[in-house]
Each structure stands twice: as C-alpha cells, then as structure tokens.
Image (cartoon, rainbow, N blue to C red; front, side, top):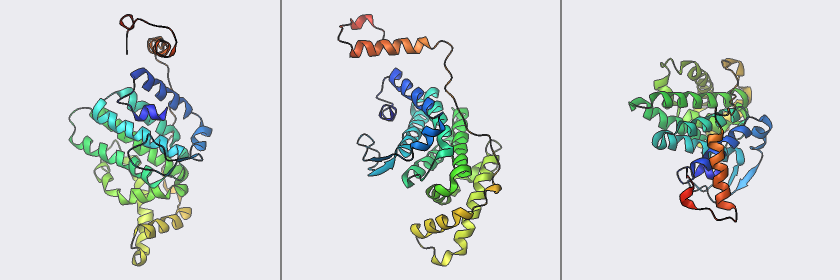
Length: 264
C-alpha cells in the first residue's frame, strides 16, 4: 500500500486512491497510530530516496505521505491526493514517537519547501496555505502530546527555526506559530546556558534530551484534537465499480476485449 503511494506518478489512479482511502481509515484508529511506531523495518528496498538501514513503520508512513504531498502540490496538483495524505498525517500526529532524524528533516523540510512556494506563488495559494497550516498543526500536535519522546524533532525545529519568521505576522498562522515559539525559546535558553560546552550536534541533542522532561507543557495553547475521517463520495459507485472491474480484467483467467473496456 505504501509502495503504491510512494510511486504515485506510476500507479493507476484507482489503485492509488484506494490505497489512500485504506491508509486514512487505518489512521482513524489510535491503536494503529501507536503500534506503527513500535514496528521496526530493516532496509525497505523500494524506498530509494535515501538508504535507511532501520526505520519504524510509522516513520515510513510519514516519509511516504510527506513526499507525496510535496510532489502533488508542486507538480500533479490533485487535491484529493494531498488532502488525504495530510489527513492521515494529522490523525497520526499525537502518537508520533521517537521519530528518526531523517523523518523529522523531511517533515519540517516539507513546510520549508511549501513556504518558499507560498511566498512567490500566484496560483494555488489557497491549497498551499491550507497545507502549510495542517503541517504546522501536525508538528504542534506532536509537541503537545509527545515532545519528550521526539527530541529529534525539537532539534530539527531549532536548526530550522528561521523558516517560521515570515509567518509570525500572518493571521492565518500566528496562533500556532506562537506555540512553536514557546518550544523554541525554552530550548534555546537551555542551550545558551551551556553554550561553552555546546560545540556539536550531539552536544545540542544531549541538552535537548536532558531538559525535555522538565518542559512546562502548560505554556502551549490548546488546540482541538486533529481527527479526520474518510467520507464517502455522493456516488461512490463511480469510483469503486471501475476499480473492481479493472482488477477482474487484470487478474481473472478470462479474456476480455480491451477495446470494450473503459480505462481510468
């Protein structure tokens, strides 16, 4: 399923949409969202963006969905595709645990890329703004619920904190950016207090890990829980019937006249 979504540009539209529907339905279950971070994968051969010897299934879901959102918003512009990926990310966000550094980089990196597009875009502004808002809500949800278990994300946010500068005065993002600033200011002050010994990545990360348990979570403004559900279209048969027939013609041992079959 994730492999199908990963190869979005090569997959048939029906197979792609079905995979997204299944993923979104799965992420409606909090037990699923928690369990995927406890399942460790070794060397996923079809994920070719970067070699990852070890990664949680939850981390892989985040990588695939963020990649799809970026590719779709910048190239394909299929609203259904990125909307469902963002919804799945949002559903999972409160259960993000021990995210791999690369996963954190891709999540924050998605915001950075879309932010650059947003500042110079003349079209698709509404779609990009909505995506940016949801990504911020995903990050915020993770920090509100699992900050102590996601120090790699805190480190990535500290490293990339300048990408939020232009959004602090934007009414569409101010409230949630304020939450991120609370986190950034707290950990920045802790790092500055030990600046003399703070010389490399590991030192900074160690300070973040050491001070995370003392983080005063009451500083953060409370937002509604992120929950998205799959809503069936008004006439779902228009999607499901062609999809089912495409599977029948492809995998059954019966010959079908191709010219008489309407393809996706």
